[in-house]
Amino acid sequence: MRYIEFGQRGTKVSEVILGAMRIADKTPEEVATLIETALDSGINAVDTAPIYGPSEGIIGNAFAARPGLRDRVWLQTKLGIRPHPQRKANYFDFSYEHIMESVDNSLRALQTDHVDSLLLHRPDALMEPDEIARAFQELYDAGKVLDFGVSNQNPAMIRRIQRRLPFALAANQVQISAAFTPMFDAFFNANMQNDAGIMRDGGILEYADEHDMAIQAWSVLQHGYFGGVFLGNPDYAELNEALERIAADHDSTPTAVAINWVLRYPTKMQAIVGTTRPERVRMSAAACDWVMSREEWYEVYLAAGNQLP
Ligand SMILES: NC(=O)c1ccc[n+]([C@@H]2O[C@H](COP(=O)([O-])OP(=O)(O)OC[C@H]3O[C@@H](n4cnc5c(N)ncnc54)[C@H](OP(=O)(O)O)[C@@H]3O)[C@@H](O)[C@H]2O)c1
Image 1: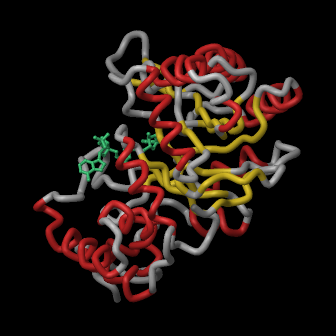
Image 2 (image 1 turned 90 degrees about the horizontal axis):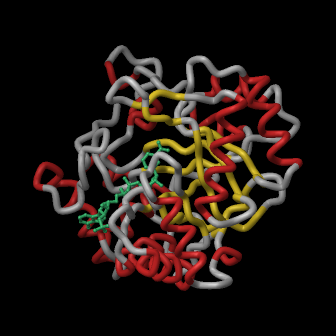
């Protein structure tokens, strides 16, 4: 496993993070085993959110079932996505009141006195950065949150919040996979007249690198917006062939190669894996066993159906 230096203290956090969005039907015992498998594989980080149904509560019960487990884990949660009371939809809330209330609810559910990192989950159009800064400062002073970050935000949004804070935002959690590459597409086609050249993210990767911010890639095995897994998917036959060929060359697996591909971008990268199976957690951790060559990285990009200028 490889580790990055995360946040204000340079905490050693694994490049592969265990994501807990899909554990709703798992028991606390099963989740404790999943987390212990991750730890045994060198993955020391767990990501959750209140919007992931019972996820935080199950993790909290897993910690309660295995004394000492919480202290071995770097724990991150998020906030700001709320079910709308009148509509069958979510809305976003970064108000001071919601931030404070959500963190207290998360700590209660997770059965812990602090989280190591807290992310603003999806941008709230009505956010008032001064309120966010006040809430973050109070949470930090109370020892409830050690580091703060954002998710799904572009540099302009991040700058608005960052300039009010006395400490650096540590992470931006965004969607990246071999089959979801708008950031790379815009990069390769900069200043061209084709649609691929349209930069929709405002330079998220470049901003992160400039500000020593971790990029946490979510859905690293999925295509589209929650479109499903591309591994073994006949719609991605050429991509799967490339992943299998590279895996065979390194005595690895397509899963590890796909994650290795995401981590290969040369900045502070992390990949959050959402598997609920211990054997796939081990497979995912193996993504860090070797560094992908340029030829391999570009082969995967092209095999996913992309073109280079
Ligand atoms: N910030 C955000 O907006 C945001 C959004 C989405 C997710 N996230 C975070 O990112 C984490 C990961 O997201 P994700 O769950 O979408 O990631 P993922 O790792 O791309 O997908 C995990 C899913 O893929 C399945 N899977 C894995 N390998 C497979 C294979 N070889 N064949 C078939 N199915 C396979 C897993 O099933 P098994 O369980 O059976 O292995 C699981 O259902 C989440 O847990 C959450 O923490 C954040």
